Length: 125
Image (cartoon, rainbow, N blue to C red):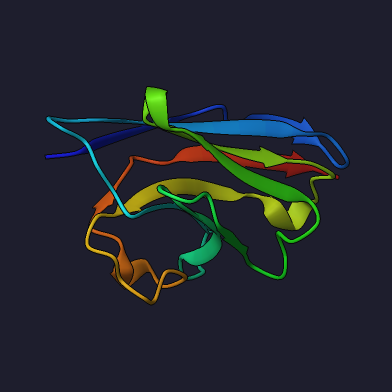
């Protein structure tokens, strides 16, 4: 069973950058895609970005496009989310997740079968 561990969250100011990491472990780890989601207090979990593990194709939410970059290191079974020009509205718990079955709805939480514990990102104004 895959296990995901996020790291890299923290408290930053508006305009700062952070890089989140998500390390996957488990026997013979493989996945179709790895995604990042976030959840702010009182809000639903929302899609941020996803990357196809084989070909590196990416997809972003409108709020992430142009500011965030998702990448992967297949050798390390690790995905990254580089977040630049952070805004207070980016404040949330950020979760990584894997879609190991090739769902087509890769921007939906339901497409992902395993989740990390989350890492807090707080952006002060």
